[in-house]
Amino acid sequence: MILHELIDYETLRLIWWLLLGVLLIAFATTGGFDLGVGTLLPFVARTDTERRVAINTIGATWEGNQVWLILGGGAIFAAWPPLYAVSFSGFYLAMFAILFALILRPVGFKYRSKRDSARWRNGWDWALFIGGFVPALIFGVAVGNVLQGVPFRFADDMRIFYEGSFFALLNPYALLCGLLSVAMLTMHGAAWLVLKASGPVAERARSYGSLAALAVIVLFALGGLFLWIGVGGYRITSDISPIGPSNPLLKTVALEKGAWLTNYTAHSWMIIAPVLGFVGAALAFIAMRAKHEVMTLLFSKVAILGIISTVGLSMFPFILPSSLDPRSSLTVWDASSSHMTLFIMLVVTVIFLPIIFAYTAWVYKVLWGKVDEKSVTDKNSHAY
Image 1: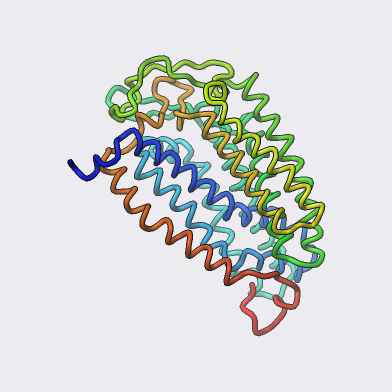
Image 2: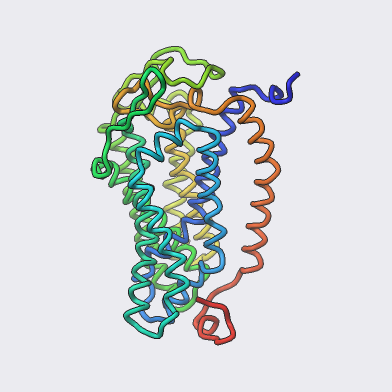
């Protein structure tokens, strides 16, 4: 037996679909509170010292949290090449806007305190806000467009044609998903500030975080409602082999209203995902008001897990539907790398992913504790 045949092709494809979800959730639950803190910065901190407190709650860990974003992009490139090709070319300007905003963060961290000028520091603080708000918004807008279908098609020779534009991405449903993403990560950032900051910063974060948690519940419900009555979903109408070749043109697909909800009828256990989204946000709100710091962050993570899982389970087996030519839609069963490639990548992942988890946990343990005004004003500290 050839070594890579120890795990069949269907199982490997399913494992890599799950791993992609794990990486996205890991980024949202770690890098997500970095984005949330940036979004909240102009509102929870009113003095330079308070802003430094907020910034230094993420200053020691934000770089490590970016690992999950890089791993997610790498997983898409290696495990789902057609998905990488379509999304990174079709969403090129959106990706550029995200990268530009993310680049503002390290520059802002490093340079805001280089000059003793209120105008200088205020400018960098707004740059940090952009670095948090813009990626959070565009990530959600991208998900909203994926749920509606992306305007691409494959020619018979598998060349990709994308016929959308950047401004077409900013449609009403996508913007609703973008606002949900901003609210979700703002809630998460507030939960982190409640846990890691002290004094007025933590108190204001609790107030804004409570509002964000309520917004998550409302926007998540609206998103599901519109998905049911207003946004068409996709359904495979022909036979498709889970171990077949990676050629999306070998199937037929229909666009139907409410099709994204059929998985919940066929597999009732999937309802746990949206339930976790609603319950997690509600419990985060309760914990925030009751001043249970650790539980607030935990429930916020549960909400993120539920919301992202809802998208993935609703779409399965689709990973990128096409609004231009439904037949070109990419699915788990026809858009992956080869059997051997997925197996080799899985072996590498099994070795290195636990190491990354262990190192990340160790870093957070070492850097545990609150950030207060004394710690950032101490001349012997390495605070931003």
